[in-house]
Amino acid sequence: MEIALKGLGNDANYWQALGEGRLSLPKCAGCKRWCWPAPFRCSDCGSWDFDWQDVEMAGEVYAWTRVRHPFGGAEALGLPYVVASIALPAANGIRLFGLLEPGDDAAIGLKVAGKVRTNRAFERDVLAISWRPVA
Amino acid sequence: MSTPRFPVSTAVVGLGVRQYKRGAAPMSEHGVLVRAIVDACEDAGLDPADIDGFVTYGDDKNEPVRLMTDLGTKELCWSTQVFGGGGGGIAAAFGAAAAAIISGQAKTVAVFRALVQDNSGRLSAAVMAHHLTDYIVGVGLTAPAVECAMRAQRMLEHHGVPRQCMEDMVRASYYHGARNPKAVGYGKELDVEAYRSSRVIAEPFHLFDCSRENDGAGVAILTSAERARDLKQKPVYLKGVAQGAGKGWGDLLQNDEHYASAGFASVARRLWEQTGLTPADIDVVQVYENFSAQGIASLIDHGFCTYENVAEVVRYENLIAPTGKLPVNTGGGNLAQGFIHGIGTAIEAVEQLRGTSANPVPGARYSLLAGGPGVPTVSSAVFSVDTE
Ligand SMILES: [Zn+2]
Image (cartoon, each protein chain N blue to C red):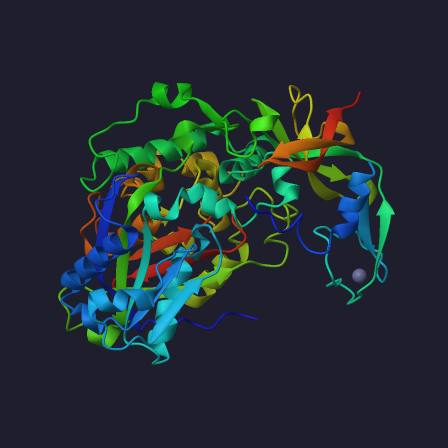
């Protein structure tokens, strides 16, 4: 399968940082708003400039599902696996997708910390963030 | 900034459906579609050669110009597809057809959706292909069920919608489907224990919370209200239609403001403004339910209930025709009638007002169709029995 995009919008810096084990997100240089998906233009203030800043991989579970059906493209994750949307307080609540590992205690509001991992999908190595519960 | 009243000057005059088990269509997608269009023309009393416009949605691969040799099309005047890979374009397709007719760009327009797996592959894969990037596949978010399950989980866990509502939604669809000879689920009652013990796909969805996929084609022909009066069937008028997404909803990698909703906030508002109607005026509802929870979210978005009173409204007995106050998916819906990318829900919305539904709502005057819950672009329409 040919996958043209790595993500959505203007997100090259996100992938470069992830490749170095960091999380970097765009903050509008004009109105200082955190933005995700990464835009080319800030629709609030009209700025075309963004400061990409490192953000600590600490957040909380906003939504989740435990997948038990073997969907194509997810074979390498094994079953079940837990996909989650993680809200980042340090970036004004922007939400990122991630894997919750382990996912046994999945619940909205669960505090988590993340690290970059590699997943194999559609015969390619793909970067993702793995989130684990923290006390 | 209110939406102007929608001109009630177009009507659905012909319906055609050919539906088969997935992988069991006797012809190619193109052939099945031609069959369904000709069926719809016979239903209306129209010559297929007089269809001068075509509208579809959801990445249908059948380019209308290729149908001309089969139909004898005299002149192709309108050929349009609504953007979006999911079922969010279904009601919008009726809007595009009406726009062509009202503006004089076409006279008789076929709204269609055809799907034969051997030609177009699995629908779920085609829908997801719109979104498959490294960001998505990296976390195993490779199917619509996973995306919708996450939103459903928040609807249950955070907004407190009872799990029972999902079960009741599914049971209502299967009840209607079991009594609809044209449904895949005809004659098959859903056993509640079978529902509860069916395998989990992605929490909170069990197998029966997920729509089927069928081969087939469905067609609804629209023309002007004036011409409709001279045709064979009782006209069913398009009372209003809206499509799109409001700010804070869309392709936002799940950063939507109303995350657990089905995305209809702005569409529903415009629909009510256009028609001058309120949810209380609607007699029967067809909601495109890719998954049970998204059907419930659609009802909430349109104002039929709230997070607070959802358990009183989305209750099995209340959803059943003809005795329930809010009959929903009276043909069986995507879960039990069949799933040619939702076109069956549009057909049923019209059949209710013709009086030909297998589960009729007596005296129904207004019928609502809501398409594509949870996807970036959604759409809704209201049909009516008169032009007032
Ligand atoms: Zn800005």
